[in-house]
Image (cartoon, rainbow, N blue to C red):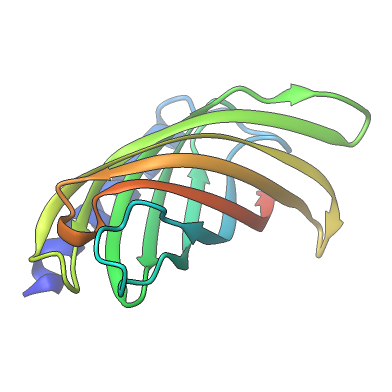
Amino acid sequence: MIIRRILPLIAGIFLASGAGAACGGETGAETNKFAIEPYFTYAPARGAPDRAQFGGGILVVYDMTKFAGVVVGADYLGQFSLVSGNISLKYPISIGPSVTLVPFVMGGLGYAVSGAGGRISSISDIGVYARSGKIMSGKFNVGVCAGRWNNAGDYSGVRYHFFVGWSKGF
């Protein structure tokens, strides 16, 4: 049942990312890249004290242009809690020969699972990350953001994320 609800969301995101690239998405070293971003989560307003306040997840990002991308994510807060599809808007700022600072906003829809009653949820985040270095011909990313889940049952509320990841241009 969950798979039937999630697969159309994921398929739509990947179709949108391909359509964006085919319809004038930029090419080059700084765009059309995939990023894998595992992260840690702190959720201070979780409600019941017996609920885990720490967790994490993973995001897979496809940048359609230098300023926009699509994101698929999975979250864990004491149990598998949410899968999501998001749009990311960002503004890369070069602050040195090999360091880029990237403020971003991200928003989308998620499907709340375990303990959240199978609801469609809204997600919003704002943050910043730095991209630098070379690892396996890709770049190293580190950043922070604050966000909110709405209509996610026990998982609704504010959360803070710290992430470290890797991105590669194609």
